[in-house]
Length: 429
Ligand code: IMP
Image (cartoon, rainbow, N blue to C red; front, side):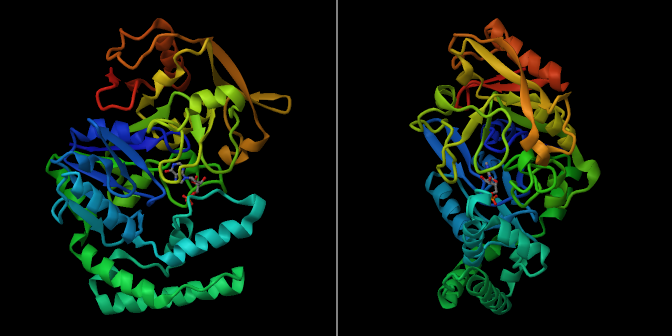
């Protein structure tokens, strides 16, 4: 059995956790391949809601093995707290169930402090990061001065490397940003304990994954963030510092190019974004508030990691076509279709106007979006509540037409439709 990759087709928060939860029921191995605890996947099982930031969401299925790939940056404090919470909810976590790549990088308080200091220094040009230290941790990696998980295996060398890293961070904090230095002894004491707790989980996950594939097992690679936050292919510089797109799954797990089978793109029935950066179909006012929700429900549009209200807008098919191309998406999972119930008409951006020109593609990719104006196609809305519907035929005609319009304009079938936050609130075609 092959590797299937689930990717966010927008700016993250597409509801990947829901789709992963559904698909991981059929997987032997579930794997995170990029990013860190900037991600937040809400998984609802019965009356229990889990917020997972680092563990693969599919770990809530007791038969799965969870991998944390070399493409990740891992805050050990967050991971250990998450393991504790998941255990308290009755889910078994041990070194046979969770394996962490020896080549994943550690996030330290130094990275958190640098993330905050750099955002402050950017002023009006800030990126709106989650302040989880993601950018600085990847900077350390690319700079070849990062702390890899494998360093934990030799406690003395690990703590010496950590001490040198904090010294370097303190130099930057003081010299570049006029910020307070960090207290090295406290960090070293905490990381000594984290190291002892994480050591049993560390290993070579690429070989394990390849062996599983050769034995006919199925791996589900769980994307975090989204295509438009990809460091290379997103709305640079308003992006994260990793490769959340599908090819990142191969690099971030150590698998060969031929391993991948399906790429499932998760797309919300409308568009949302947190943080700064261009958003051609963004809505304001009453309609935006209506799509965002009040924040009282888990499902409302407020960041899982930061609690920030998300910016909302109409679905952008130019960007969705781009996501299909960049990831090689073979099928789509459309989430939150139920939220559109009650709108008289619904708009879909199908082309952009740039000056006097109309275009269906992005001249220089999404980094260039600031100059575009969305041109919309307007379709009929529907008034029916969709949350109890479980079949394609059961959907109102206008809802089916909305889905068919998306399929038609992007050239990929919509195989999964979610109509509510519960595991069962899904239509599979
Ligand atoms: P960072 O990843 O914390 O550096 O943040 C960079 C940008 O990516 C910011 O706009 C964040 O809001 C956004 N971002 C990072 N992770 C997520 C996510 O999981 N969902 C949505 N946006 C995210």
